[in-house]
Amino acid sequence: KAGVTQTPRYLIKTRGQQVTLSCSPISGHRSVSWYQQTPGQGLQFLFEYFSETQRNKGNFPGRFSGRQFSNSRSEMNVSTLELGDSALYLCASSLVRVQGASEQFFGPGTRLTVL
Amino acid sequence: AQSVTQLGSHVSVSEGALVLLRCNYSSSVPPYLFWYVQYPNQGLQLLLKYTTGATLVKGINGFEAEFKKSETSFHLTKPSAHMSDAAEYFCAVSDDYKLSFGAGTTVTVRA
Image (tube, rainbow over all chains, first blue to last red; front, side, top):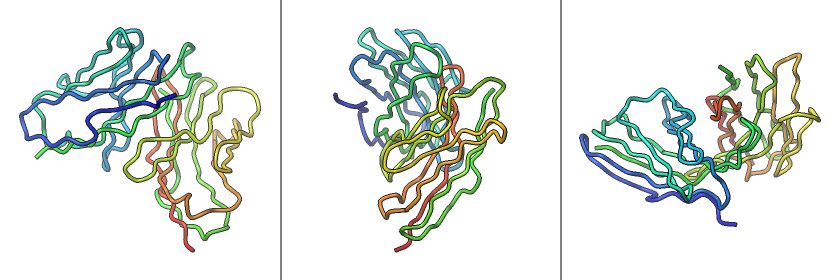
């Protein structure tokens, strides 16, 4: 079974631009979560989607948004990029039916650099 | 909200020595706990998880962890470190459809 795939792997943008990151979950997984990883803040939860519905959202500004498609693929968008948005963005998928019971499988991440 | 705290941001061990990484959790309900490992320029890989049942959990690569409710701990151990164990390790708790992670512990292995 193929793992979680994320595209692109690396991205360089300038301040003020917007960016879209893509995530394809493991086949059969309907839950997709996004995390931001930075040296200063560590791993922080962005949002989680299940069957195209956002079930939980982390404490990030409205510039961060996401969506999930009917095939469970997900995208996240960051508008008006700031230097502090430079990070590794990780996507994870899960079979979760019961809250918390299923482990999340992570993709390799997208490394975003904002100049 | 549930949370975890990892004690020690860096651990250095000799090859063949015991690896012990500490994690304490805060939860008002029985927690679901996880240990993940991250190698440079990679995503997170699940080492092991505790949901219910046996408190000693065995994972991949020779790692195991013990859930101790009385101590609110979920420490990770490996009896004999290998050079390939050099990585960053994260303890996490599942809370409301998300994982809350500890700050991570970087393990270096000395030859």
